[in-house]
Amino acid sequence: MELYELTAHELAELIRTRKASAAEIARSFAGRIAEKEDAVKAYITVTEDKMLQAAEETDRLAAAGELLPPLAGVPCAVKDNMSTAGVRTTAASRILENYVPVYNATAVEKLEENLIPMTGKANLDEFAMGSSCENSAFFPTRNPWDLSRVPGGSSGGSAAAVAADECAFALGSDTGGSIRQPASFCGIVGVKPTYGRVSRYGLLAFASSLDQIGPMTKDVEDAALALNVICGRDVMDSTSLSAEAPDFTKALTTEIKGMKIAVPREFMEKGIAEDTKGAVLAAMKHYEELGAVVEYVSMPNVGYGLPVYYIIAPAECSSNLARYDGVKYGHRSPLSRDTFSMYKKSRTEGFGPEVKQRIMIGTYALSAGYYDAYYLKAQKVRTLVKNDFEKIFSEYDVIISPTAPDTAFGIGEQTDDPYTMKLADICTIPANLAGIPAMSLPCGFDGKGLPIGLQIMAPALGEEVMLRAAYAFEQTSDFRKKPAFPGGNK
Image 1 (spheres, rainbow, N blue to C red):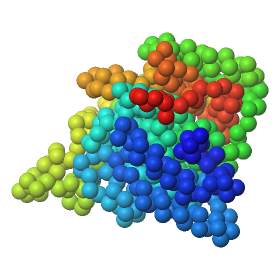
Image 2 (image 1 turned 180 degrees about the vertical axis):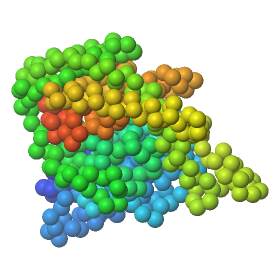
Image 3 (image 1 turned 90 degrees about the vertical axis):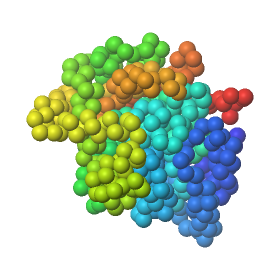
Image 4 (image 1 turned 60 degrees about the vertical axis):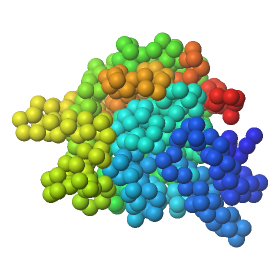
């Protein structure tokens, strides 16, 4: 087995026991990227030199007898909407095509503090707006399980990089499912923490009340280790929670006897593919065999999640993206004649169609005469969705559901059908509206051999019980297998 095929915790153990050096591991991933990146297109920017330098520094400290952090020397990809000092940060948009930040996002800073080398900046849907990674201004990313299919979005590059073994783990961001849905499509683990668990400082904002950074990994243990690195209070983010982050690895046990698991009927009805429904039903039975209590429940307001999201998220997007005007940084049109034409032409040339559409929807929803009818009403319904979750969590430990209605679809298959494309996030959006932790892990395969994801949701700050439920399922089943590339296995 090659080094790049191992999990993050397996690589960390090799470094700790001096059976492999961080530099050897970095070179293994550099070779893997060189071999597969032309096919997968997971990265906008590959930072091989930076990765190798960081790995060599880790080896120097190890040789000097320094105590290394748990994931020191384990290569990680970073979604290209997180600020990286001295490394281009584009948000997959022409408007930031040549933007090089002078500071790190807090999550990136934590990676560096923990001696975690960065493999590169992963592709995404422009400004994290999309469900397929086809909205990138540069190129679409392809799903390593089937290169004719999408990896999901918006964190499609991060998911594909992990699935293709082009990094050991990755950071993504999740506004309405952008970590969990691509994790489902690519057969990996993806975690959206409680809103405020991870600092958003340095994350290029899409919808500030929904955005959250989280890990995308090969297994649940890796997810717990990554959460240990990135969670915590940050004075640079006013929405950062003061609650102390525990050691999430202590939650990893297969003992879940008596755990109460809710399955909302609304997540299992119209629009869910039969293969997906069957896999979730099998997961329910598996949990019962492990001693958990699994019961159907009703969440009558959760069905409003999708329309509520597509009012609130564009409204916040309209406000957040107003800063990209050609004045301070980013693209400035050379055709500008005056201030107004500079604004108009710079934004017209810099933003792609999906971003423009969402800006216009959001601006309309916030405009005089429509604010109460749309944005304010959406916020009130958001509260009803949140109340649904609180009611269920007063009686149950976790909620499970499909992560996505179906498996990965073909590239170009839904680009002319925006409604169907947006339905890919119908199961994931409610957790963002409620601010609760949620994750996806593999639970089966469809008739085409594509992975299906199981979503687990927990109360706010309930990552430990969520990880326990996920770990128990993962360790007593075997749904992670290696994707194949055309022409042979990996």
